[in-house]
Length: 194
Image 1 (cartoon, rainbow, N blue to C red):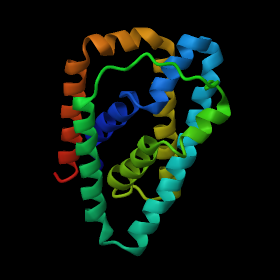
Image 2: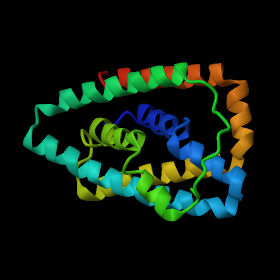
Image 3: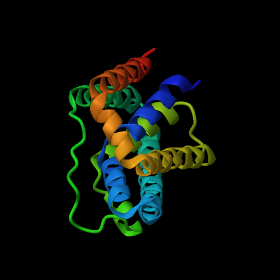
Image 4: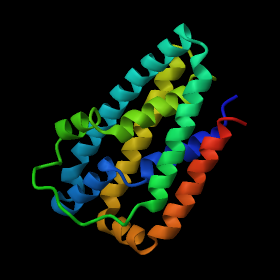
């Protein structure tokens, strides 16, 4: 049975921690306002949904054709989580640099997901380490793809809504927030082997 606390911790941390999607969402809100920035978040939703679906197909193929890959994928997933934990722990507060191009479009949000290493690694890691070992029907994979894309949409919408307020909070309390998120990521990595 899936370790839901570890799964939920990982999904929340991965989606709510600063990354390209959240930083651009927050920047868009400060430049264009919430309503004009929301279409970018819709693009993120569909981009994450597509990347996660492709990750599901890739991971299922590996699990089906190379069953011995399961422990290797768990190790890779754990290593990525530990690396993400270290990067989170050592990260600095967000800068207030503004992008120069219009970044509040659906197409920009969608296409960004295909070059965003965070989303690609997040999708492969989540699907291959948490979902496929326990659920492998197409309907369950589709449900988890929708859950993961929805979590991304909710997170980026929160970053958009709270914009500079969230940035100020993270800057003021960055060490405490980063330490807590890092420890939760270590828990997620260790739980893969328990």
